[in-house]
Length: 124
Image (cartoon, rainbow, N blue to C red; front, side, top):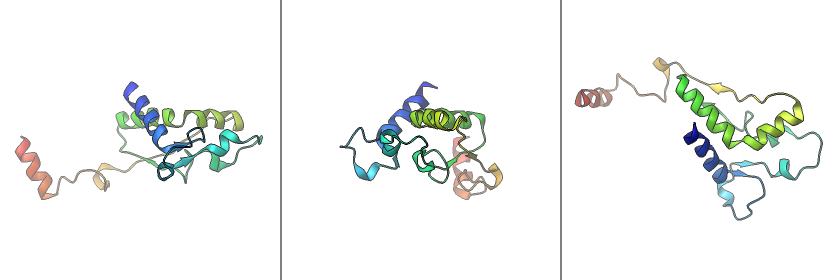
């Protein structure tokens, strides 16, 4: 839990721009939340919440450990925006979690790949 919380904070520091650090490298500003911070409007726009699709796509396998790790990481990465979303909409924010079945997951290891089979044999 603590490791993923820290990872989320590190990612926030590197990639979320809220206007408080003008020296941040502009090339690393993947998520710009400065309008949310500086906005005096009563109703923020959807673009103010970078955890919503299409600005963020959260994908992992469907193991409980990776689901939980991702939830903790994203919660700590977008904590101020998640709180603001709840205050402005009255709803708990939802970050969709996309998964794929292991048998067809293109990001997983391929057991039928000769190189993978060779590595498994060497490990046994």
